[in-house]
Length: 397
Image (tube, rainbow, N blue to C red; front, side, top):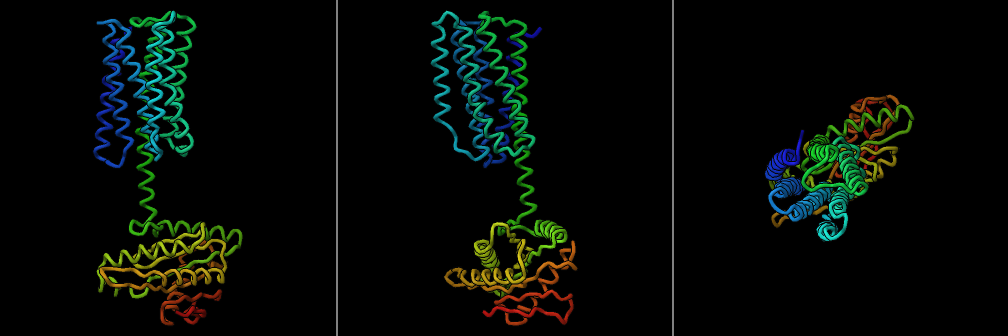
């Protein structure tokens, strides 16, 4: 039969292990601030259990009063870790109010006729408040990911066990600070298991975050922050399939910076990288919410324009040229002016679900824009692809 001492030893060892793990995670990933809060919460819980063991050596009220307050503090710290995980401001004032309020209320409970049962009720409710506060973030910001679902579900179970435990103690009034009944022991054992599962939910939260960051790295260009070629091709396949089904057109812009090699050779690759970043920012300021700007490689970019005709695409190309010309970058005391050439193409039925055909059409238009003197745009008409059908419309510099 498990006793209080055995349960507490198991809990202490597990909390120390969890604290060490989160400390290690925090040291390996300095920007992962939530790990520090979760490490502190686990170690505070371990300290609280150690202090509670003194109940058998001295007057039990004082160690249980201190340990209960520390458990409430640990729950608040863990809740603040969840806030940091989701980028929310830490609720220091609310947490301090819960801890101080719990400390005072537990102390005053000693002067009532049902002091032990009331103390257990206050202790359980004060634990449950920060857990309940964290549930909102886990449900609303978790996005239904496995880690957030597990942490939220376990949090609900912890609250339920705490309320059940306090309700039974208030109703029966027969609660001992030294010897637990089999039912009380079972509830404490359930809480020990749930706290371990709760921390496992935090581990899954971290894994979910890491997977999301890796997915972002796979879809975005690390230099400019715009979409990369992988995301571009996925989006083009989607738009081509949609256009084939609905027969609604969309447009594609293919562009590159004029004289980019000369910028790299004359000013250095760092200057070239800064030009790419500045151009990306300028281009995004002229695009609509549903448009996608992607870097295909080097100084070559592509823009997907959903539900856009060839004429509308040409107007957007003109706006991008104006934004590009407005960029004047200072580099080591010298001024670098940017210009671009743009090819505009529109999806048409013969392209079907093959985005490479649309890219080829935009590339031919881009070739025409460069052939006509650069610093402008050209459109590809709807006639079949051939060397004789070069783009016909160009914007002057």
